Image (cartoon, rainbow, N blue to C red; front, side, top):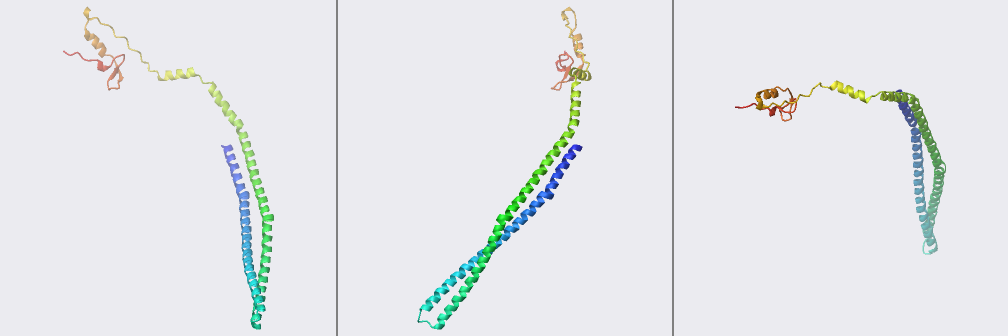
Length: 243
């Protein structure tokens, strides 16, 4: 029982070690990785919005430049109308340049985060996962070795028990055991004597024979409810003589 308790204790030690070290560290590692991926995803979405704004500003700037060029080439338009188109072109160009700079900054930031995630962060996560798995395997190895040591320690006790079983088996005597059973359950019953033959032609009477048969001791019930007479006949076979 002590060895079984020791073995169970080893199971508990391994479980506690895995829970306190491997599983706890793995949970924290997964949490950090999830937050890092969330940050990268948010930055990618910001980049997409900046790219969309830059596309819109660029198209509006191109349209404003085209409108100014048409207005400047049209001598039928007043100088005020041409200046209005020039001012609109300058504004759209500035908006486009600002959107372009914002897009460039977000692109640089996104590439930096992505590079850090895939070239530094993710490999570091894999490295830590490898360390955790090595720690788990080492704990299992130590548990196996401890289990073997416990089993080996009880081998002498088991061998003594087996030796005792063999000695007990060697002293068994089937003939003596059988005689003991016979002696315990023997009934002492003696078979009845044979029925004598009575020759009635010599002056004998059948009443004596009938009385001898009737005086035979009854031993037990038959299956049909009658009684078995010690010997070879049943009580139902005996009938009183009628007149």
